[in-house]
Image (cartoon, rainbow, N blue to C red; front, side):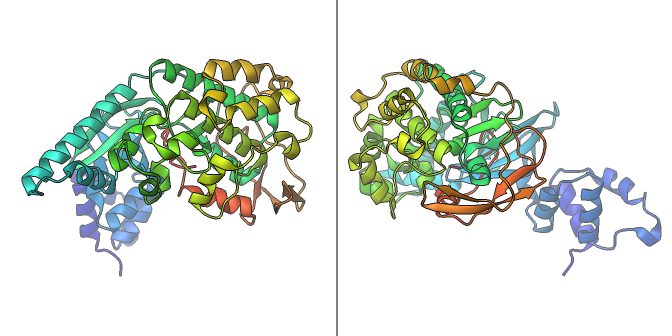
Length: 441
């Protein structure tokens, strides 16, 4: 049943999307015979005339208009969702600047408050006090993350609270996360992947110099903008979420009961971080970056496993896969650098991102790293592509373009392979990036 016209008008006004007078003037522009008859019809024309976004109109029709404005930010669209919250494209009303706003999930706050309780009596006053402590720590950590300023890190501007909803304001990145890119295009050329990994390593080198460890490096937290720049999402924030929710001394069993996005995704997590979050240091980020490189060039996780526990055990026990076996044409130098990045013991890895950068730049493949936007080479329509002989999938031409990639015809892999199903299920949905584009893999 369609929403009544006046009910929709009241919703738009209550949501502070348009003033009542502005809406009345807009309706007066219609001849009587073409005037919207109900709220649904008015929603359609407001979207057509770009007075509201589809996301906003849908929210008003659902009676959720009160969730569309957070402080001075008006939400325009949902662009990402994951364990660390939903991410929205938003506009700052006073300046008109576009930003990304990440809303902290209430579930995460409640879990952190419950962990804070301990054996003390659980009164409502005590709960309120614990909630205040948890949120205070969270906002302090966000303030620390906002001091990071590097071209390869998504900027965190501020945190805020509106009507009980806690949120972060992040740099909006017009682009795509690498997890989605792999899902759509398959393996990335080695030279291109090295260029992206080098950019991420430079951002991490800067952050590590400020004593900030990421702890959740993966393709979904690396955003590629339209100029070809890689930006790291959630820099400095993953640790906050992890420690507040599961606690710094959580056991492996306790960690496995939590949602994977909050804990460091199992396909990329270092062995030592899987056991104890407090042991994660810059070498853990190096390990995760190595796993990310493997995923980029093969479109598969570094270790197979039917369960999260099985994958974690593989990080501990399984032999490091040979990159040259998967990609016979790569140089011994690159295979050696990869193997050192993902060594089982932290002391056997490179000890800093500076060393990683030097090792990768010494590889002959680094000369093929792109300088600027990269366009994937189209596969012939209908060609079957094998990924390490385990997965195959057909490719079909599409006129859709991808953020961070030059305009033109693109080819999208249909999600029919085992590898692709793994990618799409690892974290939930997508883009933003929680750069403010995505919260994904």
